[in-house]
Length: 155
Image (tube, rainbow, N blue to C red; front, side, top):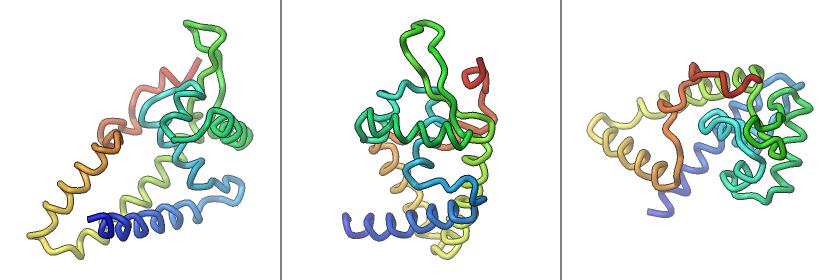
């Protein structure tokens, strides 16, 4: 089972890398940076410590990552309204557009691959992947529609 997941993981990482490689040179977003943007898109604005935990990195690493994303105009830092000592990281409109663009590219390529899976096996593949993602704590795409309320993202 582990070997099957590793094989699928290699395919999915390649798809993600290709989806990011086609971005404007000005964006030059790494997979780790993109993952941060996805966490913010799916879970809303986060404190750096919460983002670090979600990414499985240390807070200083997450802070440096956020510094780069702020410079690229993809996220912004702002003081938490309820606790002015806390700073929250939120997607900018440009960050949301990037997530939308890359997600759509990935969606098209994955759909193309799934069409090659025989119909009788497709449901099992989908069910297994859903359980795998849920077990890892991933928020399903449909639950964080890109049309979600942006109120959290804007002061």
